[in-house]
Image (tube, helix red, strand yellow):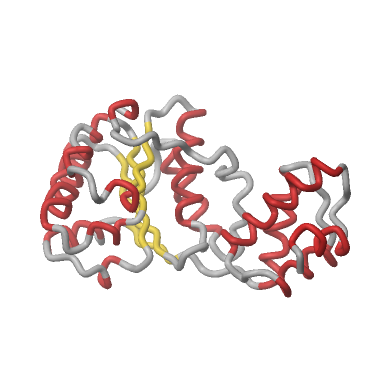
Amino acid sequence: MIAQLPLSIQLRDDATLANFFPGDNQEILQAVAELSRGKGEPFVYLWGQIGAGCSHLLQATCHEAYELGVSAVYIPLQQLHELDPSVLQGLEELSLICLDDIQAITGQAQWEEALFHLFNRIRAQNKRLLMAASMPPSHLKLELADLKSRLSWGVVYQLHELSDDQKLAALQLRAKGRGLQLSDSVGQFLLSRCSRNMAELFQVLDTLDRASLAEQRRLTIPFVKHVLEI
């Protein structure tokens, strides 16, 4: 099924449940972990601002499912919404379907209808669905009222933004997974001089990781200034 998708959709290697720093989202982390094991609530809807971690959790849940031998697929609708909605056909044969960027298909009648029928097929076959969007179901500008009601059938969670201390801890957790040592002072420097968005902060960490490896340097404030030109 995954091979039949028209685009090559690959999961990020670093999108795992283990390196997701939950902060105040521990209940959400537990819920998606249950989904990957075929347990818990069968329909889960996540929403949050860009960088909150929705896409990370969807991909991480797929990774976890694969490791457990559970069939799963990750579908980023932001990438697929300009294609034919028939790409959703047959997904209910898998145990877990993760649909990202639900807001991308709002107002598009064929996509809304296709998603509505997929939802019904998933439910009829007792499969599991994990969804994510930038807003709660009630705020989606959907033309198909029945689809909006379906999206609210399960559990709806908002991913809460991390505090500054939690962002620092999240950066240090991600750095540790890469074999980097990120001191409090360097982490706080990044938080004060870079974007507050966690997705962008992780991209900065990726840049520093590559530079540190290439130059065999530790992450110090002078080195960070040099690499980021700040």
